[in-house]
Amino acid sequence: MKITFIKEITSQELIHDFEKTYGSLERLEEFLKRNPDNMKALVDFEDWKYHLENPDVIKETKSIITHEFSLDKLELILLDFIKTNKPKSIRELAKLSHKNIKNIHAKIKKLEKAGLIALIDGPKNSKIPILNYQKIEIEV
Amino acid sequence: MRQSKRGWSIVVMPDNLLIDNFHHGYPHIHPQREKIAYDDPEIVFQIVTDHIQRENSINFEKLKKELIK
Image (cartoon, rainbow over all chains, first blue to last red):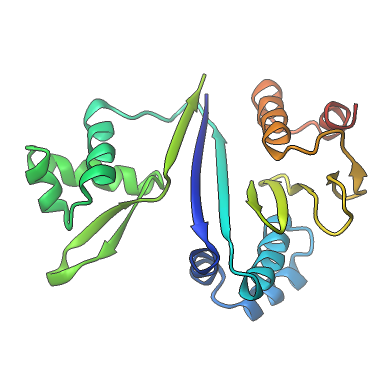
């Protein structure tokens, strides 16, 4: 099974992702010196330098080939709710979807672990669920 | 795969396979930078992922033949 994740991001968001992954451009350069065969690091390094100078919109597509990916009905409903209703917290998501917060919490953690959503800090220790991708394609 | 005005790149990890159209003005496969037969990154991406699905891994020489023709 092939799962493809697609998102469009700005140069600023791409650089923010790089900072989270590598720390700084200098650290990435050091990493690349130690690992010259790492093609992902090489492409990220060149893109980082380019997008600092040339703001743009970037389309990122990531595919994984796996037999272990599954989404149940509730998880799909939650993804849809996050996309369309943009809840401000997991509690609000539970309320909007008329589901038990405990069940929702476990599902949200699974979706976060799978990389489909991210949880960003909201007010009063709440976590705001956001989609990491605009499109997910499943190909058998 | 990453696409922008700069061009496009496809990286397969952990195989460290890179196909892109940067610097040389034509799409190529590393490390020898051999020219491939397709300009459209979506087609290249499909060929690469179909190859991985079929072979269960990257068979570099076989994939190169599929891309260079």
